[in-house]
Length: 366
Image (cartoon, rainbow, N blue to C red):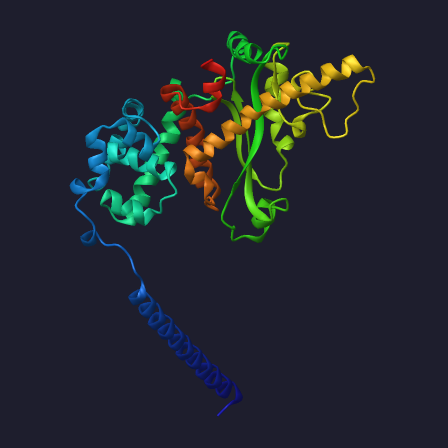
């Protein structure tokens, strides 16, 4: 027997052993997978109430304002107003593929309740009489529809005010704080936590040493009537608020007539924006040596600090109204972006239609 034949026989035996070993490993993996599948616990359709008997159907049928606001964050009239815009998009989606398990009103209420509460998907499944996988399916469809239609709804629009609107908004501040003139908005950052990303590089970008956690930074500008007029959201946690404000600075320089300006904390102050963004004094900042001038500076600083509190009300209301933001958000950037943008538009819609907003209450209802 030649040497080449012996080598071929040895190689063939090695291949057979490798195939046998691979089959053994595969069988072990399948056995473990089958065993783990038997241990899984999940809700099935038969374990849930029929949808027509579910509490969600009852809630929508009763048409009680207090119940709507508590569960969905919107009153009956505001819910119906929003539904008129969303309904055509959800019906269009429903005409393709399999028959829908949830109608458009339930889809919208499901999305609003998801945002308004920290409720888990499997709890929503029990409330709506559908399985958790169906909950996730219809949440994705409804958020896609909301993301598409909300920027087109006048009451939900996020828009930089024009000169006449700035004059109206600034009069609300000067009426409450005489001497603090031409201020029409407040800006500040808000940090939201996210789940830990799988990729090491993404983990590093979203890790904030200030809070020792993974998060995103968002900068939001509120006008004095309580609405959001500009926002930059979903930025990596390692970025500072002032770095995110390039587009805001452009708006202030090129689309804001003098002498109109906004208020922020010292993180946003700069020589470039000194006439456009007013801030309280920094710690240790030198005041005038003249006693009368120093007294006037301190009075004005007190007014600026007091007025700047309004942006804290706005950011706080955003997280209280949409309690989903208080939980760690998805590590998926696109999914997270959709939710935050939808929330910002819904915040404006809620403010304009229901009036539930502390900034509006303080500055507009005097």
